[in-house]
Length: 63
Image 1: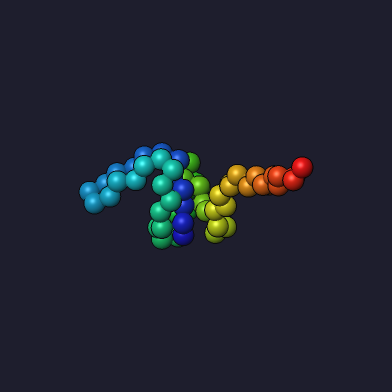
Image 2: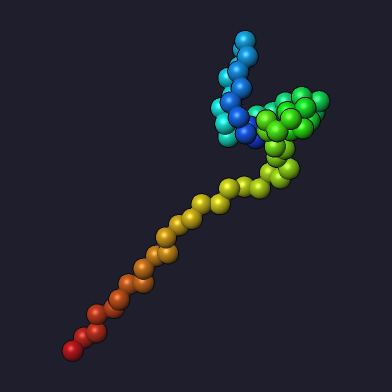
């Protein structure tokens, strides 16, 4: 199960920061979500990035 952490957590062999997305087993994920330490990631949508529109080139008119 993938979860997004709402708080920092650390143990003997790990350190997770607020906002980290980590993979845990279903039991641990449910426990962390139920206690408000994390929220479940339900979709795997790809992240879209914004791009500035390209400016149209002006053509020079011959006089």
